[in-house]
Image (tube, rainbow, N blue to C red):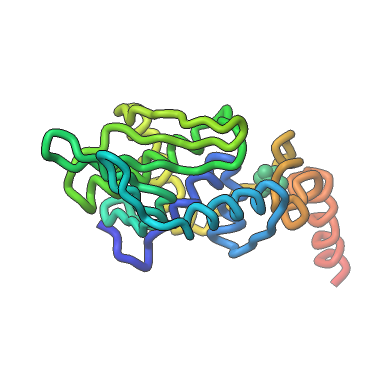
Length: 212
Ligand code: SF4
Protein backbone atom coordinates (compact mmCIF):
# COMPACT_ATOMS: atom_id res chain seq x y z
CA UNK A 1 0.00 0.00 0.00
CA UNK A 2 1.26 3.46 -0.89
CA UNK A 3 0.81 6.62 1.13
CA UNK A 4 -0.70 9.66 -0.59
CA UNK A 5 2.60 11.51 -1.02
CA UNK A 6 3.91 8.64 -3.15
CA UNK A 7 0.93 8.53 -5.51
CA UNK A 8 1.73 9.00 -9.19
CA UNK A 9 -0.64 10.82 -11.53
CA UNK A 10 -2.89 8.91 -13.91
CA UNK A 11 -1.58 11.08 -16.74
CA UNK A 12 1.95 9.74 -16.17
CA UNK A 13 0.86 6.46 -17.77
CA UNK A 14 0.27 8.17 -21.13
CA UNK A 15 3.55 10.05 -20.84
CA UNK A 16 5.49 6.89 -19.98
CA UNK A 17 4.07 4.81 -22.83
CA UNK A 18 4.76 7.65 -25.29
CA UNK A 19 8.34 8.02 -24.02
CA UNK A 20 9.77 7.09 -20.59
CA UNK A 21 12.11 10.09 -20.84
CA UNK A 22 9.16 12.45 -21.40
CA UNK A 23 7.51 10.96 -18.31
CA UNK A 24 10.73 11.50 -16.34
CA UNK A 25 11.13 15.09 -17.51
CA UNK A 26 7.55 15.87 -16.43
CA UNK A 27 7.16 13.79 -13.26
CA UNK A 28 10.75 13.77 -11.97
CA UNK A 29 12.24 17.02 -13.31
CA UNK A 30 8.97 18.98 -13.19
CA UNK A 31 9.13 20.25 -16.80
CA UNK A 32 6.06 20.96 -18.90
CA UNK A 33 5.29 22.64 -22.21
CA UNK A 34 2.18 22.81 -24.35
CA UNK A 35 2.03 22.08 -28.06
CA UNK A 36 -0.98 21.84 -30.37
CA UNK A 37 -1.65 18.23 -29.34
CA UNK A 38 -1.60 18.89 -25.58
CA UNK A 39 -3.64 22.09 -25.99
CA UNK A 40 -6.36 20.29 -27.95
CA UNK A 41 -6.50 17.56 -25.31
CA UNK A 42 -6.65 20.11 -22.50
CA UNK A 43 -9.52 22.02 -24.11
CA UNK A 44 -11.48 18.80 -24.64
CA UNK A 45 -10.94 17.67 -21.03
CA UNK A 46 -11.97 21.08 -19.68
CA UNK A 47 -15.16 20.86 -21.75
CA UNK A 48 -15.92 17.34 -20.51
CA UNK A 49 -15.00 18.20 -16.90
CA UNK A 50 -17.24 21.26 -16.69
CA UNK A 51 -20.30 19.44 -18.03
CA UNK A 52 -23.13 18.72 -15.61
CA UNK A 53 -23.73 15.26 -14.18
CA UNK A 54 -26.91 13.77 -15.63
CA UNK A 55 -29.18 10.75 -15.63
CA UNK A 56 -30.09 9.04 -18.90
CA UNK A 57 -32.30 5.95 -19.01
CA UNK A 58 -30.45 3.24 -17.04
CA UNK A 59 -27.36 5.29 -16.16
CA UNK A 60 -26.08 8.15 -14.01
CA UNK A 61 -23.31 10.04 -15.82
CA UNK A 62 -20.71 11.61 -13.51
CA UNK A 63 -18.03 13.95 -14.92
CA UNK A 64 -14.58 14.83 -13.57
CA UNK A 65 -14.58 12.20 -10.84
CA UNK A 66 -11.52 12.10 -8.52
CA UNK A 67 -10.22 8.54 -8.28
CA UNK A 68 -7.29 6.76 -6.59
CA UNK A 69 -5.76 3.40 -5.76
CA UNK A 70 -3.81 2.87 -2.54
CA UNK A 71 -2.60 -0.50 -3.78
CA UNK A 72 -1.12 0.93 -6.99
CA UNK A 73 -0.19 4.35 -5.59
CA UNK A 74 -2.13 6.23 -8.20
CA UNK A 75 -4.58 9.13 -8.35
CA UNK A 76 -6.23 11.38 -10.91
CA UNK A 77 -9.50 12.36 -12.47
CA UNK A 78 -11.76 10.23 -14.63
CA UNK A 79 -13.33 12.25 -17.47
CA UNK A 80 -16.66 10.43 -17.20
CA UNK A 81 -17.89 7.47 -15.20
CA UNK A 82 -21.26 6.03 -16.14
CA UNK A 83 -22.96 4.17 -13.29
CA UNK A 84 -25.16 1.67 -15.09
CA UNK A 85 -28.02 -0.05 -13.27
CA UNK A 86 -28.49 -3.62 -14.39
CA UNK A 87 -30.30 -6.43 -12.52
CA UNK A 88 -30.55 -4.27 -9.40
CA UNK A 89 -26.78 -3.74 -9.41
CA UNK A 90 -24.86 -0.57 -10.23
CA UNK A 91 -21.84 -1.14 -12.48
CA UNK A 92 -19.21 1.61 -13.01
CA UNK A 93 -18.20 2.16 -16.63
CA UNK A 94 -15.34 4.68 -17.17
CA UNK A 95 -15.20 6.66 -20.43
CA UNK A 96 -11.98 8.49 -21.37
CA UNK A 97 -12.15 11.34 -23.91
CA UNK A 98 -9.41 11.83 -26.50
CA UNK A 99 -9.31 14.63 -29.07
CA UNK A 100 -7.38 12.58 -31.65
CA UNK A 101 -7.66 9.15 -33.20
CA UNK A 102 -6.84 5.70 -31.77
CA UNK A 103 -3.08 5.31 -31.25
CA UNK A 104 -0.89 2.41 -32.28
CA UNK A 105 0.34 2.00 -28.70
CA UNK A 106 -1.29 0.89 -25.47
CA UNK A 107 -1.37 4.33 -23.79
CA UNK A 108 -5.10 5.11 -24.03
CA UNK A 109 -6.11 1.60 -23.03
CA UNK A 110 -3.66 1.51 -20.12
CA UNK A 111 -4.91 4.85 -18.82
CA UNK A 112 -8.49 3.62 -19.11
CA UNK A 113 -7.63 0.33 -17.41
CA UNK A 114 -5.89 2.22 -14.58
CA UNK A 115 -9.12 4.15 -14.02
CA UNK A 116 -11.04 0.89 -13.83
CA UNK A 117 -8.52 -0.51 -11.32
CA UNK A 118 -9.01 2.59 -9.16
CA UNK A 119 -12.80 2.30 -9.30
CA UNK A 120 -12.67 -1.41 -8.47
CA UNK A 121 -10.64 -0.68 -5.35
CA UNK A 122 -12.64 2.39 -4.28
CA UNK A 123 -16.05 0.83 -4.80
CA UNK A 124 -15.11 -2.79 -4.17
CA UNK A 125 -16.85 -3.91 -7.33
CA UNK A 126 -15.60 -5.43 -10.59
CA UNK A 127 -15.31 -3.20 -13.68
CA UNK A 128 -15.29 -5.45 -16.71
CA UNK A 129 -15.68 -2.92 -19.50
CA UNK A 130 -14.91 0.69 -20.32
CA UNK A 131 -14.67 2.94 -23.39
CA UNK A 132 -12.53 5.58 -25.07
CA UNK A 133 -14.32 8.33 -26.98
CA UNK A 134 -12.19 9.59 -29.89
CA UNK A 135 -12.75 12.95 -31.54
CA UNK A 136 -11.24 12.04 -34.90
CA UNK A 137 -13.30 10.40 -36.24
CA UNK A 138 -15.95 10.75 -33.53
CA UNK A 139 -16.41 7.25 -32.24
CA UNK A 140 -16.68 5.34 -29.00
CA UNK A 141 -14.42 2.32 -28.71
CA UNK A 142 -15.67 -0.22 -26.17
CA UNK A 143 -12.87 -2.05 -24.34
CA UNK A 144 -13.04 -5.33 -22.42
CA UNK A 145 -10.57 -5.15 -19.55
CA UNK A 146 -8.83 -8.48 -20.02
CA UNK A 147 -6.19 -9.85 -17.66
CA UNK A 148 -3.43 -9.15 -20.20
CA UNK A 149 -4.29 -5.43 -20.31
CA UNK A 150 -4.57 -5.28 -16.52
CA UNK A 151 -1.13 -6.89 -16.08
CA UNK A 152 0.46 -4.59 -18.68
CA UNK A 153 -1.08 -1.54 -16.98
CA UNK A 154 0.13 -2.56 -13.53
CA UNK A 155 3.59 -3.17 -14.96
CA UNK A 156 3.72 0.34 -16.45
CA UNK A 157 2.59 1.83 -13.12
CA UNK A 158 5.28 -0.15 -11.30
CA UNK A 159 7.99 1.07 -13.71
CA UNK A 160 6.88 4.71 -13.27
CA UNK A 161 7.10 4.35 -9.48
CA UNK A 162 10.60 2.94 -9.84
CA UNK A 163 11.71 5.79 -12.09
CA UNK A 164 10.30 8.43 -9.74
CA UNK A 165 11.82 6.73 -6.69
CA UNK A 166 15.30 6.43 -8.22
CA UNK A 167 14.99 9.74 -10.14
CA UNK A 168 16.68 7.89 -12.97
CA UNK A 169 15.41 9.66 -16.11
CA UNK A 170 16.37 7.77 -19.29
CA UNK A 171 18.66 9.46 -21.79
CA UNK A 172 17.26 11.03 -24.93
CA UNK A 173 17.30 9.13 -28.17
CA UNK A 174 15.90 10.82 -31.24
CA UNK A 175 12.97 9.00 -32.88
CA UNK A 176 10.20 10.11 -35.22
CA UNK A 177 7.84 10.63 -32.28
CA UNK A 178 10.13 13.40 -30.94
CA UNK A 179 8.70 15.65 -33.67
CA UNK A 180 5.30 15.46 -31.90
CA UNK A 181 6.67 15.82 -28.37
CA UNK A 182 5.82 18.98 -26.44
CA UNK A 183 9.15 18.75 -24.59
CA UNK A 184 11.37 18.57 -27.65
CA UNK A 185 12.94 21.99 -26.96
CA UNK A 186 13.86 21.08 -23.38
CA UNK A 187 14.90 17.51 -24.19
CA UNK A 188 16.94 18.26 -27.32
CA UNK A 189 17.01 14.60 -28.39
CA UNK A 190 19.24 15.26 -31.39
CA UNK A 191 22.02 16.53 -29.14
CA UNK A 192 21.57 15.32 -25.54
CA UNK A 193 21.50 11.68 -26.63
CA UNK A 194 24.46 12.14 -28.94
CA UNK A 195 27.77 10.38 -28.35
CA UNK A 196 29.51 13.31 -30.04
CA UNK A 197 28.24 15.76 -27.41
CA UNK A 198 29.05 13.36 -24.59
CA UNK A 199 32.61 12.94 -25.87
CA UNK A 200 32.93 16.71 -26.30
CA UNK A 201 31.86 17.35 -22.69
CA UNK A 202 34.13 14.56 -21.42
CA UNK A 203 36.96 16.14 -23.45
CA UNK A 204 36.48 19.52 -21.73
CA UNK A 205 36.69 18.00 -18.25
CA UNK A 206 39.67 15.83 -19.16
CA UNK A 207 41.50 18.89 -20.51
CA UNK A 208 40.64 20.92 -17.37
CA UNK A 209 41.89 18.20 -15.07
CA UNK A 210 45.04 17.67 -17.10
CA UNK A 211 45.86 21.39 -17.20
CA UNK A 212 45.02 22.22 -13.56
S1 SF4 B 1 11.89 14.75 -27.48
FE1 SF4 B 1 11.86 12.54 -27.90
S2 SF4 B 1 13.29 11.61 -26.42
FE2 SF4 B 1 12.80 13.67 -25.71
S3 SF4 B 1 11.13 13.41 -24.30
FE3 SF4 B 1 10.22 13.86 -26.28
S4 SF4 B 1 9.85 11.89 -27.24
FE4 SF4 B 1 11.24 11.53 -25.53
